[in-house]
Length: 177
Image 1 (spheres, rainbow, N blue to C red):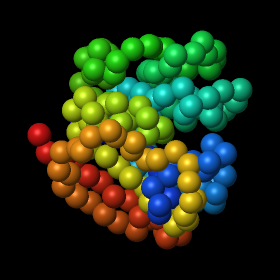
Image 2 (cartoon, helix red, strand yellow):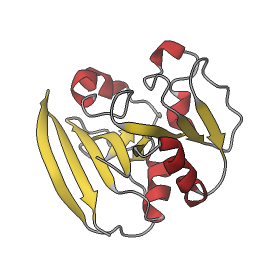
Image 3 (cartoon, rainbow, N blue to C red):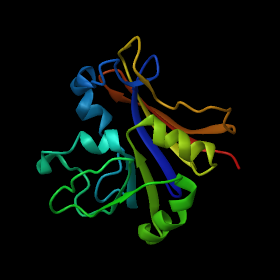
Image 4 (cartoon, rainbow, N blue to C red):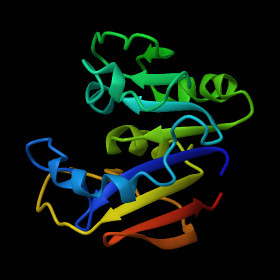
């Protein structure tokens, strides 16, 4: 994988967390859904996420899965840095920062992790090259959608689809130019 890749786990009905902003039902699939993520040693040079995803790691430095991989957090809020993590907090349009993300990645890919809102901004700006979607075998009924775009995207080609166990399916898509 290269370029900018969106990694996300979602329910069968397309939500990344439920209406209470909880991903508790997803925890039973952690071992299966973790395969192919953007952690340290994944071949990515930088990870980008929104404030909601970042907040899920706050207060517990041991839960930070990215080691010393540079992380960029897009936020409108003041957030505390996680000790030992290489974090850059930014405000503004994603297109304004994409070249800097690529530069920080040092010739490797940019991984978008977590929330759909940030990924939708990258998608609407034409900056997402690939998407790795882990479909978890549970329906939430409502919540935050996996990719809340406001306009249609370009066509995506399925690169790979495979079962990861426990009913989890990994779908890897590449977007056409």
